Image (cartoon, rainbow, N blue to C red):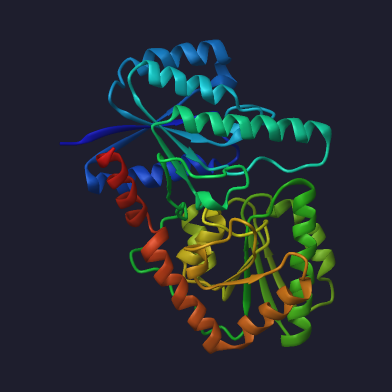
Length: 361
């Protein structure tokens, strides 16, 4: 018998919605376990909160004893990152007799040093803590013991990493290639000031690799990449770096582009099991060079990930040259990535974990 389940999302992110993609890949994988996951939205950004919540009340009357997994990011439930309304959604589900779960895609409050940042951070922590008390099941995408705001994991908390949000073939592509020009891959750049910092890190790493190894190829694609093309080309002028820059591309093209890279350079903050753009490289069998942080833990560290400190740019540059120049080392890291992907980050493995959770609670 097929078991119905609902993934409840807030407003849609543009131009790509990683949470919706996550839900679609999870829904496809759950079919093998006779679980039918349907995506619904609380479209408050279109209809306003009163209408959106009234519509949720009406839908929830049909979800008694049905699992409804609320997908949490702060900006999905508030335009400015004050997500208290997600608590209203959870209360509506509980009142209707649904089995309410929450999946934390944002696992930490937003940083910042302004007064408004402090207020927003306080609001987000309070909301996440109150969500734990309301939900029947809490899914964290990083190990809960790594979270700064959680002193002890509650009994209803579990850890399930995210997948790559890509159509990875059953046999992931090998990372090694015959092209003598080493290729560095970068999948997406953060917007705003963070993206400016990331661009400078990428430029410094590519310059160093070109100075040590000669000609290298730098392939940058994904969200916000095209906004940095002029800066990147200017920064690599007169250096033996073949640069390719594209914005958002189709998921199949992401797999194709990553599969011809020798390494993924991930500098969008510390790596963790919630960073799908980093997991994309692992899924494609690549070594990954990334920053370590408080949420960096197994199983991400089981993959072919070389960790460096965000404060030691020279270490990142040196590691990049070693990975590109030492074929044996690179192949060993790639093999570790392929094993970790199959064991922890492939959608069948994630779906099996969700199936066990939903069928035993």
